Each structure stands twice: as C-alpha cells, then as structure tokens.
Image 1 (cartoon, one colour):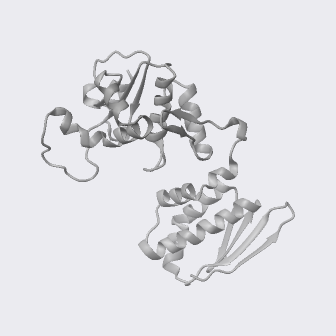
Image 2 (cartoon, rainbow, N blue to C red; image 1 turned 120 degrees about the vertical axis):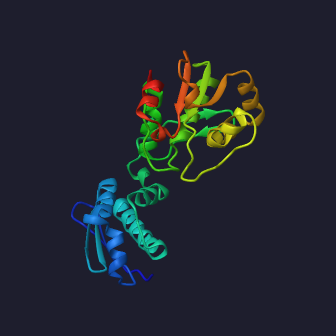
Image 3 (cartoon, helix red, strand yellow; image 1 turned 90 degrees about the vertical axis):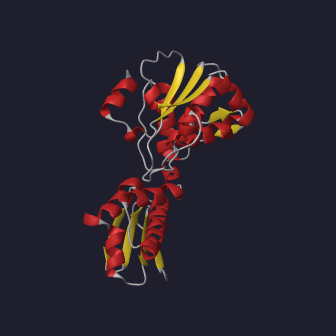
Length: 261
C-alpha cells in the first residue's frame, strides 16, 4: 500500500493529516468504514478526532498525537481488509488497544495504579484499564465488559493476589462456568477435578505467572486459593474473600442470581 501524508497545523494548534489509501478498492473501503460509518465513528469517539473522506483520500483533524494515531490505525485497518476481507467493531477496538492510543488521554502519572505481586508489578495500560482496576479496589461488585484479550481476568486476578499478599483478604475464589468455547470437547478422562481443569486453565496461568508454581500449589492445597466451576458455588458462605467470575456471559440468569446472592 502506498501512502501519501500531508500534515498542516490548524488554528487550534491541532493537526490535519491527509493521506491516500491504495489500492482504490470500493469493497475494502466499505469494510473499513463499516455500516453507517460505525468504524470511523468508533475511532472518532475514542480519539476525539474528525475523519472525512472522499474516494480513497482521507482527512483526519484533531490534536497532534490523536490525529497521527488515528491516521496510523486507519492505514493498519485498511491493510487488514486486504487480508481478511472483513472488519468488526471488536477488531477496531483491538487495534486501538494494541496501538496503546489510550495513553494519549492517560491520567496524571501520580494517579497511576500499579498492582504488586510476588513475581513483579502489574501496571494497567491505558485509561480504561486504570479505571477498571481503580473500580475493583474501591467497590464491592464490579462488571468488566470487553473483547477477549483486553486484560479483564488478568487484572482482576492481579488485584486479588495483591490483596492476599497484603493480608486484606483470606481467600481467593476463581469461578468459571464449564462451557465449551464453540467446539465440543467430548468425554474428558480423569476425576472431577481433572475434568474441569481445561475450562479453568486461563485462571491457573495467571496465578502461576504472579505467584509461581510452588506457591500456587501450596495455597490451593490449603484452600486459600480455590478454583471451581460455577455449579459448585450454590449455598456457599464466604467472608473476607475475592471472588472472580470469569466468562460470566455464559451464565444463565438463574446462575447469575445465585452467584450474586
């Protein structure tokens, strides 16, 4: 793809970036913009820029860093349309995350939150992750919503591990509904614990990375850390605990009511 960029300052000390996206393919442009320009609006709202286009010529106006970031994301997304032929809102969101554009609106450095674990420090990236962790630390119940791979479970586990290490809580319970991710696993060998382990593996992976294998095994043996399918949470009475429900979108209304009560 050949790209031509012209940048001129605007009256409000911002920037206007003009560039061509090639090859000139109407089908790919339709995918890039989305139905009713929803993909462009998603970028505009996230970065606070204005995107205009005529044919394959695009103009992006906004603050200097924002306009440059939006231009780069549009070029990357256009290349993606040539590979997959299809763009979704989730794909646009992930490209925004991967480009670390959320740091454009980062909070003041003295307000940044970092989570301390035995194996190192976990620092939330971007404004949304900072808000997410800050909400976990200050509220009893939180809901995290977003595409896969954006750190929802990992950051929640990190916050729980920090609270356990600081002796603010006595137990961590990691709960997940035992539901296949789009494919049938069939019969799984072993006892009950071994049968549900494949569903809970992402939670184990986060714990191992933050605490180490030996430490996690000892805490699980002492029931300080408990990883369980949602079906076995009914009737439990739990105090001074962090309870994390992963993949909650796969629960039924009855299961969610049971979990919350």
